[in-house]
Length: 232
Image: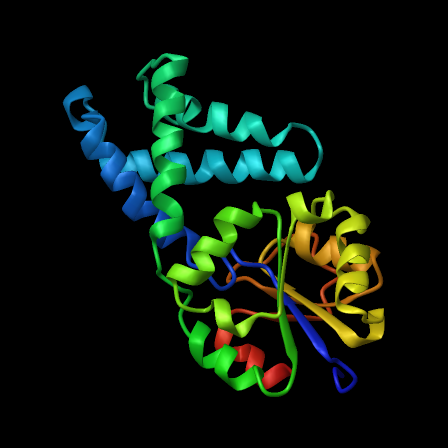
C-alpha cells in the first residue's frame, strides 16, 4: 500500500511526545505552587477538566473559530471556573506562563516511540509536522532525546499555515522537495492530521485508541504506535 513512500511526517503532541503524561506533571507543579488544594480543588478534577477544556479549545482553533492566544488566555481560567473557583486574568495568565515554561522540559514519550523511530529511520526520511511553535517543539524533541531522528521540523509559525489548512501540507512538500505520492501523514487528530492531509492529497495513518464517529478518510488506522511498523 505504501511502497512508494519516502517521507513520513509525524505530528508531535499525542503522537510521539506524550502530551497527557507531561501535562499532568506540569499541572501537579502548578497545583502545588499556586496552592489550589487550599482552595478546595482536587488534583484529579483539575487535571481532567484542564484536559477536556484544552482539547476543546484546540479543536476550535483548528476550525478557525478562535485565535491561538485565546487558548493561552482562557484555558486555566475556564478550568478553574468549571471547578467553581473564580480567578483573575493575571493569575490565569501566570498559570499559563508557568505551564508553557515547564511543558517543553518534560520528556515522556508515547509507548514504543523510540522503537518505532529506530525501525523507520533507515528506510524513510522522517519529519515533524506540528501546529505548535518551532521554539517549543524543538525543545521538546531535544529534551526527550528524539531530535536527531528528524530531517525537517515544520510548525505553524514556520509555514504560516496551520493544520488542517492545505497550505501547511503544500509548504511541507516544497520544503522536502517531495510529491504527494511519496509522503505519509501520521497523527492523532482526525481533523488536523487526517482530514487536512487527505484534502492535500496525502495518504494518512490515524493513531488513536478511540473510534471517531465520522471517520471515513484515514488510509489506515492504528491503536498502538508500534503497529505502525506492521503497516508500512
